[in-house]
Image 1: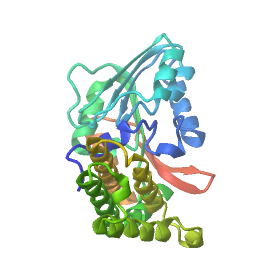
Image 2: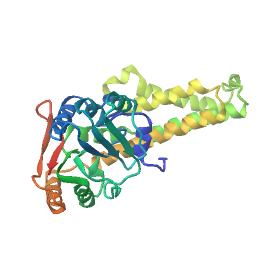
Image 3: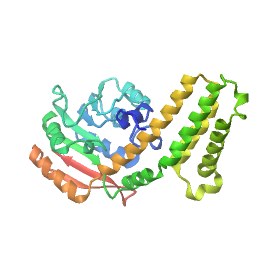
Image 4: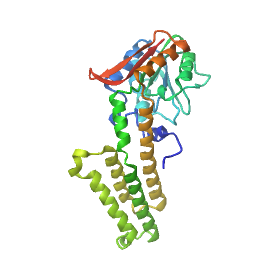
Length: 318
């Protein structure tokens, strides 16, 4: 069962610095970082920058060393706070004013936001109602200000990976794993914490055998050719539960619920990433929306990494 909060809130609470989690623990690198630094270079030494769909301040780590000062404001529909990497970046440039706003829909930006030199989004604004959010971005930019974005591309390696990840969430086995450790936790409570009685508890033994079967299926080195990274991570979390057997019932229950929510919300995030990915025809429609919102000099083209691999759509408008 998924949590009732935004699935991206769950993700950002884990301390990630970008959409790509552990793959980019220190902020965007490579071509994305280079692209962003180049965009900043056109905005002056002390720009006022608005990041839309900022997460935990994803563009801040590359921005702080690239400017003399100015202002960075990040907005996100999810509940967000600066990652440790973003905090360190902010502290390294005391002349840069930094703030983050949670619960902000790009289609309805706060009235007090205005006068930005540059608005930017990396895999963020396309989750909103673009007919409205482009109008809002136009409103908060100063005359001559620019909006730049990298948006999910329907034919990109990112979308391909996301589609694969959706299929790697084997819900039947996730439910089995959760049910098994819940059963073991109940047996511990039944025996008032006496772990020596678990082996003679039929329910606990059946659950333990079930966990062993899932571990063999997803963690065995014999299955490396067909490895499922999502289920590998899930089963690692299931096995970590056994380190908590002597903990109070409340702590065990909280751990199980956290594991359940994380993987339910993980699938929801990947599904969203796929659903907002844009085709070439859809990007043409976005160009029309941008012109209607009052933007000029609209540029839309594939953003490539490794010289030939499509990573995203690049969008720029003034």
